[in-house]
Image (cartoon, rainbow, N blue to C red; front, side, top):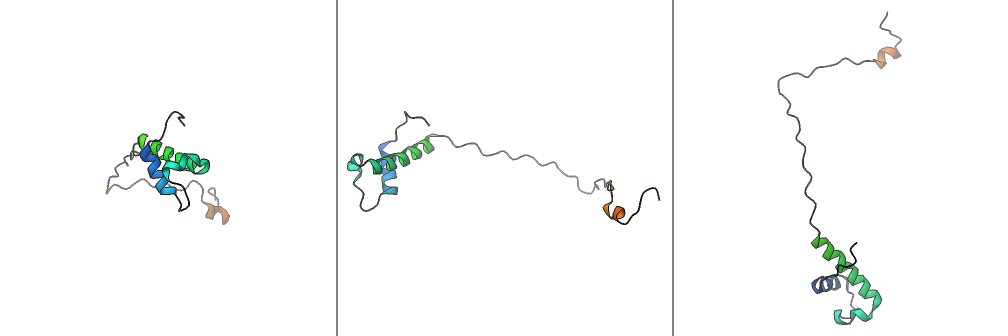
Length: 93
């Protein structure tokens, strides 16, 4: 996190409005109340960082290979047939 970044007064105002409870001090008096101030400042800082950081580009969709319709795909016989093996059949029978 960049510690030199300071939230703007608009960010502080928005954070105070989002977090405040009826018994909290006004925004102007907030600096004298360490716990409330740190909560509001942290929320404002996250808000300002989120707005100043560009959003990552959307993921590019990979093109699916075009399947040719009407052309059958090759069918490969299974290499090992478990049912035949369970029945005791062998290829050399």
